Length: 171
Image: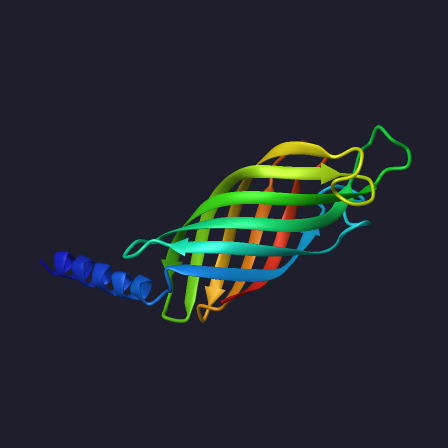
């Protein structure tokens, strides 16, 4: 009986925590790529992103649509002048599962599938652009319902995969 009461109480507290969040939120922030290969950090630059967030009511799930600009190192061992500077525009819908730790801190994990428009020349949409499918597992923490710290690994064509760290503000 005590276990059943504890489960009901925890479920109630969890629902109250989710009910306090806005249904639709916008997040904007900065991201930075981390190279996982040798020479993988030579051409990295700060990028920007915007997230549209939909929080399902009375549910730990949220859906996001992320649009980001990334500038990172592309290491291609078959070329002697490698590494190159890669640039991408990423459009990534994702689903996250939220774990509220307290009224101030909420952890989340999720995954997304989208598209990445990649280029190793100046700009993204110039000659040489390529469109790749992208799969992205992600982890993060929301602090005080306004600050987000995230990590996501963009799995795409072997030369364009990258780990992205981000910090953003949720409106």
